[in-house]
Image 1 (cartoon, helix red, strand yellow):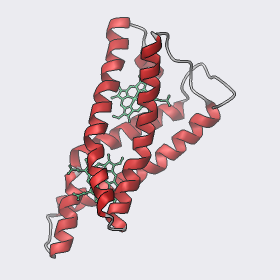
Image 2 (image 1 turned 30 degrees about the vertical axis):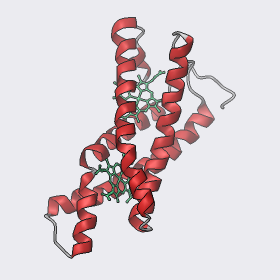
Image 3 (image 1 turned 180 degrees about the horizontal axis):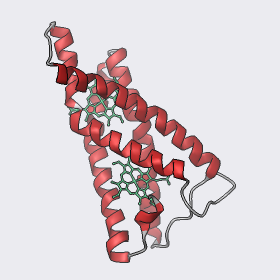
Image 4 (image 1 turned 45 degrees about the horizontal axis):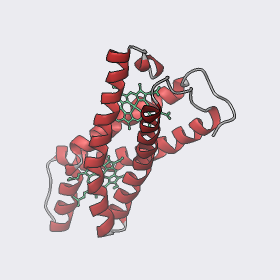
Length: 162
Ligand code: HEM
Ligand code: HEM
């Protein structure tokens, strides 16, 4: 934990939040392209240029998420984060653990993907695919909680990340 407690998220932290979020959504939507690419390479088939680009983009996008997350965790450690908005104890705990789980997934998912693709570790691939529903569930909870704060509690939570 940082010794300081800033009044707001830094500009860099905010940029990284939205960049990583956009990359994650891209990975989740087009994830199957890399499976197709792997099967095509194995069977000696040629894929359409678009499918080839999407398959390769999965690798670059995933590696970018890994590196940006390490950077973001470094910044978080150095700068600290603002105090959570006041809410009930269980909601604060839920937010804290959702964020911890997000960071864990942002590291584990690309690492298992890399192990499956480059080291051909089958179990890593199985585990990697399992991360998809977990990510989706967390995003639903995270966006739901943000909307609850924004629309019902009207505490301006979105402005903290803008
Ligand atoms: C889709 C992928 C997303 C991921 C992986 C993600 C991840 C995270 C993480 C890890 C934090 C905690 C930041 C920290 O304290 O270090 C956070 C905060 C936040 N996120 Fe997201 N997020 C995503 C999408 C979104 C979306 C779509 C919204 C808006 C609807 C959103 C709104 C926020 C807000 C407002 C905060 C600040 C919460 C606070 O001030 O306590 N996020 N996000
Ligand atoms: C946070 C980053 C990542 C996310 C969110 C993600 C997400 C996904 C998703 C949704 C799928 C499709 C699963 C399905 O068909 O049900 C997938 C498949 C796959 N991903 Fe990723 N991925 C990420 C990073 C990576 C990286 C860095 C690599 C390394 C090359 C990689 C390699 C693979 C492979 C090999 C498959 C195909 C598994 C198969 O069909 O056998 N992923 N990924």
